[in-house]
Length: 327
Ligand code: XMP
Image (cartoon, rainbow, N blue to C red; front, side, top):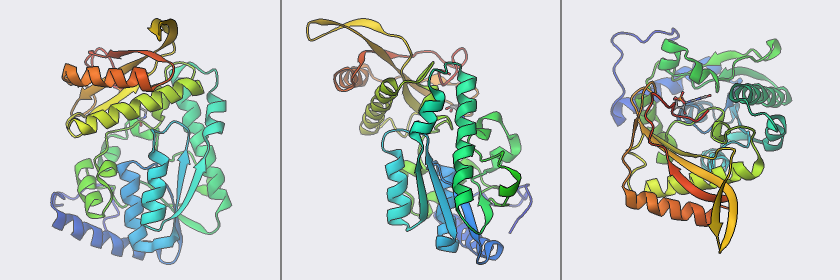
């Protein structure tokens, strides 16, 4: 096993199922050797990196892996259920599911500043994970879905969902089986491990989740409008062949209302903003040209199916000048 943090110059790119299989076999052997009969802990978000690490470890050490899935209440519709279905029901993982929605939303109540929101979400995440780790006995290792770009850049983006900052007594030896892989290689490995396509090829999702798309101070009703409108957008993008074509797409629900008319009565409701961008590295981004027909259909569904919404807007701003997220 390569224990260093540098990708060897002669390391072959994992582009085929055969090479992915070879990688999986090598990693299983290396993980068994490193872990022996000890226990490993993993924060499983359901994103591609932590999911691939979980699937590798389940193959290597089975129930010695304890995965903790923290639902901070800012996940997309159906996400926690899917993590439970895939990992607990299908792969037989030793999975601890923590619904911490109330804790997070109570801490975030009335907080409008984006950086403050991010800080609260990050700190609370570590606190919840820490509490779960303390309840478990005999943990020796902490697994992480670090990938090669994280090592190359250690950028501020990834730091939000890494479990850094754990206290002294919870500093376990790290297990990082995909740390020398690039994202596309992680996906090939994930596919070979039998993970579902919507997990392996899923669009990037920020650590603070829907929290940065429910702008200003988060309220439960507006968060629900955001979750439902995002689910409609994702469903329609999948149906119309846009899901694999557009790099990132989501809805935003800002913290202001406008007048509308519904059932012959004036309404005072939120707008939903659609964002759909293409990019190579997230440093700059262009706007996807969505056919008007699809936009009309999505608009109709959102204003009829999502309570509290009376308008749908399409954000035409590239990055720069707009960032991809609204916060
Ligand atoms: P921006 O909005 O800066 O986003 O153009 C660029 C990319 O980074 C993601 N992003 C985040 N990811 N934690 C994350 O893990 C964050 O706080 C965060 N903020 C933005 C964003 O979704 C986009 O892909």
